[in-house]
Image: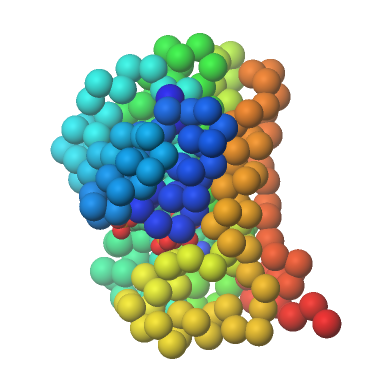
Length: 240
Ligand code: NAP
């Protein structure tokens, strides 16, 4: 069984599809239950409502999931693009609650089921923002750094237990990410990808499916995946 958080769109939805195609029974979670249920029906999985910022929601989501082979911590995102000097504390709270504490809540709740499976795998979708800092991005980069450190610490703490850990750190992927970041401003979101060839959600899901189909002794620790057109968070050039 594989559990994917944030499976209602983008990388999470593509990952749910890819893991189902690889033979996993997939449990899909997100707040938009209609989307999650529609995809679950399409791939023969199970949709459940999940708000990773809400303890009771996480508890209800994991109820009855006793043996879990794969957990994909994907729910997350960014809000705003402000310098530290004018940082919006509510945006920061949203990013830390969703990316950091959300990953912590779900991982804690499913850890016994991952160990009990005898061959567990935790995949956490961080970002190149978990590795680099960039102007106006501190709310997101600090949250992604913290999420990355949480995940990497777990790799040490679980050594000797049958659980593998893989951090996937994507660069630019064209999803609803920028639409959410810019509060539904489609024009501003489109401008992020204009003139470039970004990754698709399927590109990332392909890699996650590869990770989840390696034999139990193989641990892919950290995978950074960027479009050819992007060298760092702030350096991108259309390949000519
Ligand atoms: P997306 O299309 O906006 O998907 C985000 C997903 O997270 C949605 O399914 C959303 O579902 C879910 N989510 C948000 N808040 C949630 C909450 N409180 N509880 C449960 N689910 C929640 O964006 P995406 O690009 O696929 O993002 C997926 C992950 O990749 C994120 O962690 C993001 O930081 C990371 N990432 C993205 C990029 C990129 O360029 N796109 C690059 C690097 C890393 P609901 O709204 O239905 O709850």
